[in-house]
Length: 608
Image (tube, rainbow, N blue to C red):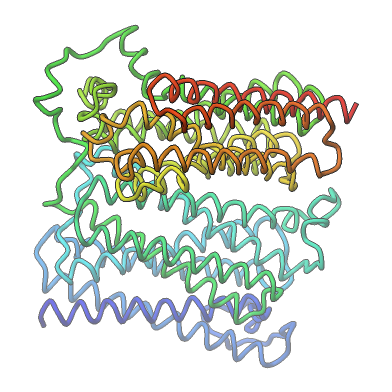
């Protein structure tokens, strides 16, 4: 026996388990789980299956196929014991595989013995199925670790991994939670099929499984966003080719799973699609296990542990009030203030009146925490850039007066608290919108675009356009066209605002090697682009007036505010200097605040 043969065997066992899981989906979806009655493990007693004699063949084949997994696991344990030394990853993982195989058998026995099959729609069945999903995921994960260990992966180390361990742990928890919600959603569809799930879910008399079904897509979207965030951060914090490749697999497979899930809904969840959807979910889980193993392996640099560079100088550890101020500085409160204003005015506009003090304050705090988390993560990623720029060289992440690991833990605590608060006080949709803005800012703008192209702010600036959607969704649990116009206004306004600032800070950006437009194309080209986007902003900001329940108060204010904006753009074009760029930059902030304020007032008057 040799290592390479064991690795091949372990991968084969993994593939076999995936096939067994898919066939288990068929047993459940075809209502064949009572094929052998209450007899277990043999199928040798009298029974009258709900779906007829064919159900007995289906159930028998499932028991035989899953029964073969036990001797496979025993072979793994014995082989690993002979071929690998004590405390080796393969030994540990193989022993864990055997434990979960036994557990899976006991879960199957419980489903049969207690009649939790076919048309049973009890909470007990849902609970056992949820446990079944978790144990299956853990079984597949253990087999994957055994196969990876036999393929040369060093034993992963949790000690000293700081935030990376938490990032991976939260990703695993999220994917398992998604699997559980998917299983319950599929069971609800099977037992209580309805032509309009959303409408049925609003009826309190509807079975609880149906009422929970709409949650699954929201959970999928939230977990998908988190996986994108985790993938980006792990590539940064663990710069290794295997980690980079694994993150692409995790995100790519999840996106494919989302597409397959959408197709599954559109086709009314035929059994074949349910099998494919769960199979892809399992493969996605295996890719996440591999990513975690690569990230935690010995020999990879832990970027968050890098000391402060000598150029940053030496700083005493912060305590008390100074430490609190430093943590507040991580959130960039001055940057957040305008975004928060658009959130709160959008709430008033959506309601047409005061949305309620409790909701107003909760969304304000939740929105601040979400934006603050994004800014804190941005500071950790951009430590090198910030050191090269005079205005940011003394940030706590640069000097490490707040270590990067602590800044990340702080950011994740803010993000989680924001999501929970917005969901509890507002709606799940508002929480997802806030998290979408965070992920877009960190992953799309900071990590993908900022250092690569002068178009960074054109695309990445969309992150700042999410706040109105957060406020609107918190009030109405909906995102109608009018709310999307608010998103569009901020999206096209951002280049005008930011490129005016970039003209003022172009030397800093050049020193840091950030390809902002003035550094790449020059001042004149930048001013021309500002003018073009100024005209686009004028047009887009007047479009809401074409929709119902938007009146002349907003239209008149928008016309005046845009006229001033274009005047300042023209003045800057005539003579490019710092005073004119500064006036345009500062007015652009006042412009957006007044535009949203007048929109809220207009809606309150029109809807009164």
